[in-house]
Image (cartoon, rainbow over all chains, first blue to last red; front, side, top):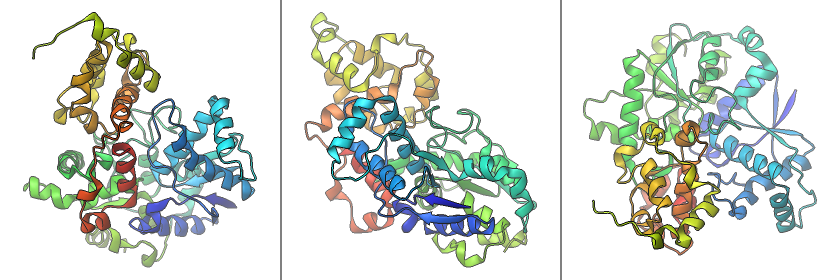
Amino acid sequence: MKISYYPGCTLKNHAKNFEDSTICSLNAIGVEVEELNRWNCCGTVFSLTTDDLIHHVAPIRNLIRVKEANYEKVMTVCAMCYNTLKRANERVKSDPESLDILNDFMDREEVQYDGDVQIFHLLEFLRDEIGFANLAQKVVKPLKKLKIASYYGCLLVRPKEIGFDDMENPTILDDLMSVLGADSVDFPFKTECCGAYQTVDKPDIIADRTNQILTSTMDQGAEMVVVSCPLCAFNLDQRQKQTVEKYPEFKHMPVMYFTQALAIALGCPEETLRFDLNFIDPKPILKEKGLI
Amino acid sequence: MRINLSRKKIRDSFVDKVQELSGQNLLACYQCGKCSAGCPAVMDMDILPNQIIRFAQLGFKDELLASKAIWICASCLTCNARCPKGINIAEVIEALRQILLRNREDHLKVENLSDKEKEDIPPIALICSMRKFTS
């Protein structure tokens, strides 16, 4: 099986560990990944004002590239790219007038977009196309006795129209971690915002959120947190530096991309895990559990 | 806080503009407060989400546009998800930011970011912040 893949900006630098572990995992289950040709920024945040069409140009142009590559569907792993591409697509599908304006704006594109590309997330793909039961059979190194808290954040679950799981009580990441052999740990802040881009000019807010979210996972006995968004990862992992400065009693918690956990379980070599890009080193706990 | 209500404020084009940009019917709100109860950012806000809607209904333009709260909201959409009247509160807050940004009143001062910050902070965060907080 071959699928079209949209990486997004951060997977090519700060979150290379997210990309490498994704590709290695997919290859390990016999899925070939074809990176979209000439992709551009997804647009990051979806514009919420009614007349702000210019900011839908970037996501829709990417969907034109998917058509040009002769695919009907495109996969993302970054929660933000997933959210923005899918919402922009939903917007033009439900509002043909805005689609006409966007097509006119991009009149040198050879493809006239008509809203028919499907955007899917790797988690959805693993659950619905591969099947968690089939995936379980591919696990060569079960994450035995590792207590993992799954953090969903905002973009995988809200708004309801784009989410692929329950908005208030999602379980897809927890289910995946159980399939990989880990002990899934529930905690109350799994869909609570990490503070997102406030990290740029108000890192103090992020210290509060990171303290609250990660302390809650620790209280429930978690040894590791997994995420699906490079922005959540930065706030929950790198910003632990500011968190411990503000809250000296705060204890560090390793944070990984869910694909790094997946790659370990599927037997991917350690160089594809790129732990050098994780701020709090996950290796000690993984070594303790005999996983690396 | 002293509050002055007036017909002039309520009928001001500002109220229409907020409704138009947000696509929301402000009068649908019955002040249950669920948006503020669930908002993870309320501790840093000077006007709470349910109060933002009330102020917008009443045309409190100056108070809203000078508030800190509209720049604290990160559009996590928890309020939208929980509003029993189907109001998208985050869209209303975005409309308020847009009214300022469309007049070149930027919130983020990109020039104040150091080279180290620009290098350390991933592009996903920098671009989001610029998209949300600059014109």
